[in-house]
Length: 374
Ligand code: EPS
Image 1: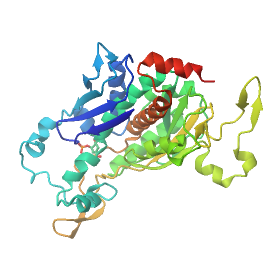
Image 2 (image 1 turned 30 degrees about the vertical axis):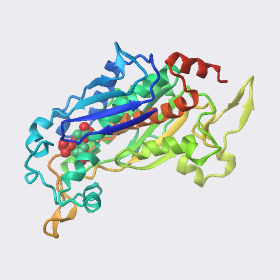
Image 3 (image 1 turned 180 degrees about the horizontal axis):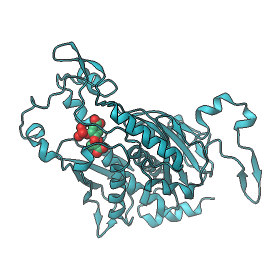
């Protein structure tokens, strides 16, 4: 299974193509739209989300709500394009008015300009923008529907916002309640503090990041491989999480904290009770690059958004003079969006791994092969 996306933030639309889906997978378009809406939700989003109402239009690969086995192509229109047609139209437009030269520290602006040989950061930021993640959420929701047929579910929540951290353990079944919450957190008192902190940062023209935990339940053991570095499940899932805009760190299970502990406090001891089992899951469900049948536990650290309304110190690339970085409108905190995106990319990466092992031209074939596994 493969996915490719295209589309600029203020261009006509985002498009995606998924190749390798089996036939006869029922596609729930309402669920795709529900995840797209969740990606737009959350406390601390900026003005752009009042303009967009993301919905998916499937162009090919599906007939009467069932996949055909052919490439699935979809489209998500950018409503904001109507306001940007004069500056973005591929058919010809005025590229001078929306030129951006007061490059933002932490954004792709400056490095991208130098790499792609342009004097306008707009040519870079339009694609680097996290707007592109709407396409990844649509693809990830389709992957979720594939995984669900096998009994595999992906869910997550926000663990911390700008250092306000919830260190409690939650059961998988408790996690979905986070999505009704302002910052997708599960502890009300911590969330109230985090909301107040977002307000405070907004008033100062500043931004916040956080940590997201993504969990995967129902994956049988033996997915991924210890035989070649590139096939290790943890490497594949972490690479997917790392590819999300603003992610600067990922971990599996105990992750970074394992490095400070003795081995006896880290490794999950093995028991046999009719089947092999473990009483702890510090490994986060992956040993030797393979799923071990326990829940997969992944975490991603999301840096604060690099567009600050107060404008960090930078250089205007047009004059080479010191300047305040550009900041027309910005999200203050997009951790809820990041939570949905991280679930989605994990789902897609896992569906790739699972489908490459199971194969199967039809969904029923994939399901029967999965059911044969121990
Ligand atoms: C983004 C800047 C903002 C965000 C955008 C990502 O957009 P604008 O420049 O239009 O105000 O809202 O994210 C989205 C549009 C989205 O749908 O997530 C950036 O610079 O990365």
